[in-house]
Length: 373
Image 1: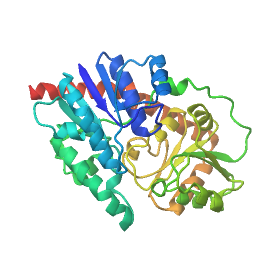
Image 2: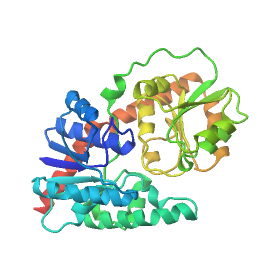
Image 3: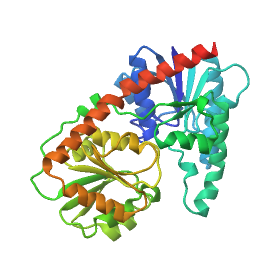
Image 4: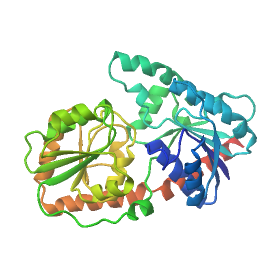
């Protein structure tokens, strides 16, 4: 089977969730015998050399990224450059990440089976008039891509209903394929030694912007004794958040490479995630793979990952709800916390590895191709 994936970047040269998704999905589909080609904007020469040296099992095809100050237009023009290659590539399926592949979907003539993954549908969840107005073109583009694609991917949980409601996709055009993590990759980072006993250590990982709910998270730690929060990430709210909340119980660690990041996971007692809206955050799965209990807001596909047996799910946008969950966690004996962490790891092993999701993706493609024939 020949599968193309088109995206605006690839891990490790871009570190976002969609870029990781592309790299690991391509790697594991190729490991299962598929011929996989990833179409991305041109890498810098040193990046291209690093990719070649890494010996990845999938092919990389590059096109120039168009010069446009409008993100949506740049995506369209990039996919327009790539469309003739995709049309001529004799692919069985073309997997479009986000707004990438739009021009190929809109092109005339016979096409491969097309899958569109809108990920977290953040453009439909903006807060405030200014951000909502800015998101309107992206909402239009998302609906258009969903209409043009053969299949639209839901990450599961509440995301499936959001795909129906926001994109207008009927049930018979939706395939549920969750995010995943590569356990071999995660386990390649040593666990190290845990710090000496002290305050319960929580870690948050994410961009410091409004939708991540970091201000609510910091407010939740105010007045709670016996707990320490490490915030990993950077973003437009970083300076303001540091000025307001940095102190003995809250550390701003900034952006970390993966070795440092997984060291932080392993040095923590729990993971905490306060996003106001999102899809299926990979960082939650990473933390679970490192045997951490999780406190998370009830957004997107969170409830497919977190339940009472491995953490707490709370309403988004409430520092008090987060504080109550933190206090409940602190009241647990050590063996109960460790038991939650073991449940987290087993859940990832059972449902959220890239081997499983890659196999499910190929099975979905094969099944849809049979129906098409």
